[in-house]
Length: 191
Image (cartoon, rainbow, N blue to C red; front, side, top):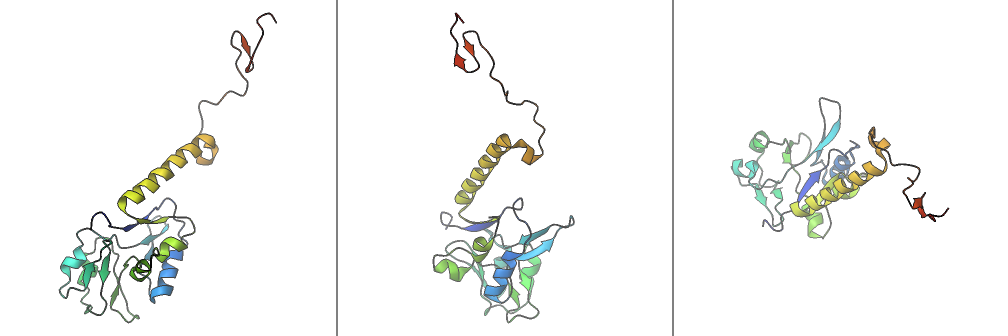
């Protein structure tokens, strides 16, 4: 399972707090399985299941309502769930929610199991307008993040003003004359 394990990664540097991920999830499943929360700084960010390799919710559930699928997603069987809420108390990421109005007592992200079975990615990944939510293996996600960092470094060199950077050394606007060469072209020593 380790080779095929897939997960979500939320890049909080890119997230704009638009709540599109929560809205599409709520639309598809009747209640969202990814939840927006406001930090103490007033920033709105999504919270979702981390699909742990060794999930506390799976171990704590007395009725075996959780299992891990072939992609590594921690999946809840709502029909098996009796609503004891133990899973809510043991999840270190507050990623399982209690439903007061929905048909199921608790809900959590299953990485859009039905969509994945059809070869699609999770809906939150597709709907995110800024590409803040990634889906893939840890290696695929790491490669994408490395690419993003590399692109950011190049952009910071090309446009330092966008990053609020005071540049100490500026490229020279005029060519420097070197003996035998003047302003970028070879000069005739007899000139």
